[in-house]
Length: 259
Image (cartoon, rainbow, N blue to C red; front, top):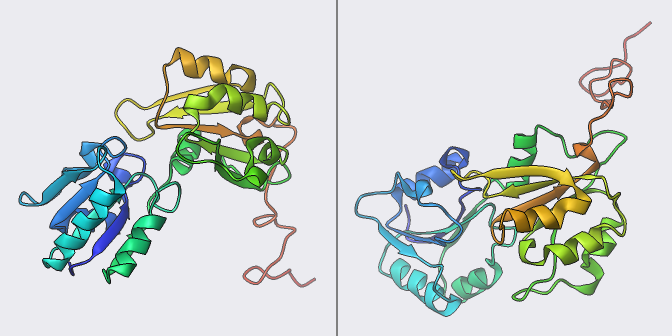
């Protein structure tokens, strides 16, 4: 590995859901910084015996970035592990700015996000033909990060799309109230806790029970909520299908049969 910082998506927590690129970088890096409150140690089972492992849950940006810069300038390869995909609530924007100002080479490696694992576990497609064709990834305003007014949860809920709600367990009553402005009270909500971790938990409940179940299960962190019409079973008498594989649909690779 070249001396550089590699911001790597660690996925939701299951080592088998790492990308091949991520796995190779983790195995070869001289230094690995990981947010130990969000990235389980099982992700680090294949690191080099002499790799320097640095926990960052208790550190600030002012401590983390200079540390990465110093290690790279000493000729070392640095992996900065982020949970899920770094582009989603990864707080990488400010890191990239400071690394660029310092002239540090950077590579970003995407990872699987929790919403993708949730859909796989639930065995649903989040874009069902004629039912829902939009996925919204969002969060409710929190103490550390405010949501812009035009992105408030209630306004996004008006689309009644497949909505993936991150970082909101501590404010779940407010989130439920906002969602109920536009979604049916009975629409299913998948409450997904620590997807990919050994203690993974998934509960599917009506929207009206979203906050109650969250409190009953004592969920405060690492919880994703999936609200979607796709979670409602479609009766066999009303099948939904894409035109892509429909024999009546022609396209570049399957031209219309000549009569």
